[in-house]
Image (cartoon, rainbow, N blue to C red; front, side, top):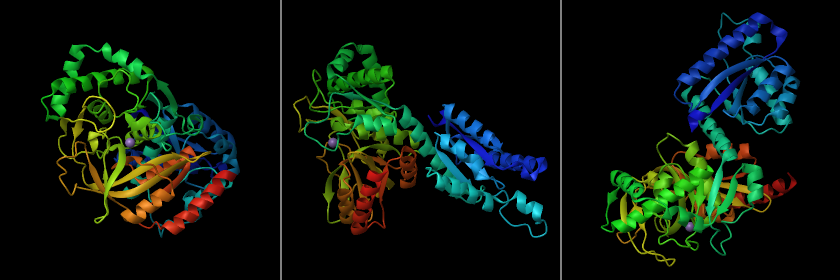
Length: 488
Ligand code: MN
């Protein structure tokens, strides 16, 4: 999906310095863009577009960017001074994410070479401040990245912002299929779908479970054979109950057909709403998740959509992003055990997952087949999008996943264990104060900065729980944010 998008590099200057200086500006920017593309840090192509020297040239390039569906954002840099009144009409019309790159063609000041011509040509220190003022004056959402364009950490920052911007593009196009409604009486999985579409672009609609059953009934034995061959290649069979596994294959094939026929990249279902189905989809859902679809249990369409978006943002990074749920604690060692009834994505696993069949403690269906595995160790985040009534809040917490500390031989589901920041007790206090859900997206690939960038692009509230978070300060921040968002 990342390869479907590109970003445009737009340079700020003006006519004042003459043609020769503008030629030099264009040549330098060609070198910068070329180096960024060759750095290996950018997930998408950066296209060197133009040098803006008039109000009209700024407006023209922004209009073009707005209407080009492959353009996922623009990066501006003022090599020279570029008077900002010239940019007002353009930036006022900009509908794509914006990164203001504050760099300079030369890293050092050349002692012998420097004269007033050099100063005029290499004055981003000056020009980018004018550019920054107009961004602030117009209250425009933007990312500011500062540093030398050859530095790996600077290139990496741009690359990660690009991933957030692709997340914004994916969000604006996202369709979510709800099989039935939410779990009865649950509050946090509810939300204003109209508000969500206005802010995030999601088209969230419902299909009857009976429609899915009709598609399941039409699945052929040959299709199931092919799916079983795929399962055999990817997973270890720890069950002889092949008929139960074949039923999951049928569910997966039918769900995928419906998702693809409607162009949906995410879906939700609910164990209370399985009319005509013999098993809650477990393995079926897990294998769909592994191929990039988003999912939320108990009808949680918000977490389903966020899973799809974060999978797209983290594409190719190899860590994994998945629907997760805080289940139970090791209070002594400050560890949270995450799992779900069935539907944990095998991209979080270390080693090959096993297919097992067990009875489900909740609901009234037949024992379903599911993938069982252990989550891997590593730095990660958990993210929860909640509807605060009138606005959406994205809550992100830094965590460190650990190799599960116990074997838990009787636990029939996949499991992930982590230590939350700043520690379990303070972290959970902050999470609960902020209203974070029990459903999250756990990601080894996306970090808090990426999601902060995404939240800014989508114009929603962002709250980050990290090693420095303190509950009393957070409480004040949440109170002030509540006022600010009501005024906004
Ligand atoms: Mn759940």
